[in-house]
Amino acid sequence: MTGRLDLPEPDAFTRTYWEAAAEGRLLIRRCRACGRAHHYPREFCPRCWSEDVTWEAASGRATLYTWSVVHRNDLPPFAERTPYVAAVVDLAEGPRMMTEVVGERELSAGADLEVAFREGVPVFRIVPGIGQVPGPGSEVTTPSPRA
Ligand SMILES: [Zn+2]
Image (tube, rainbow, N blue to C red):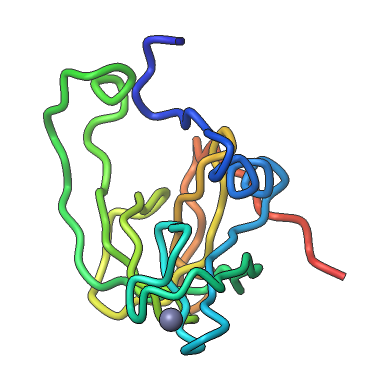
């Protein structure tokens, strides 16, 4: 136990997810009975309760659904990170995910996002493009391209 509340404590089921994240890959779960994807990972499908659910690599693309700028959080290590952006994003595959948006202060609903990883934890940032330049001091890494 590190005393940090932002790092995962994988168990036998979620280890696959966190090991992939440590390698820069975001995994989701997809049900082979109804075809729906879900997130966070569960051992059964939250739509149809089937246990025929498998891991799948997500594209890492998402759109911003909603967010809140957090100015006060006394739990370590969040206090040193304020203000930060707690966000809910819609993954391209469908599931909605709670996460953090980094490196950007000007946000708008529906903004295109891509996954990045900070210490093996998936966060999102605005897709670079139209007038967007990653800010200085960004401490995230881009996942390596998949073959
Ligand atoms: Zn299902």
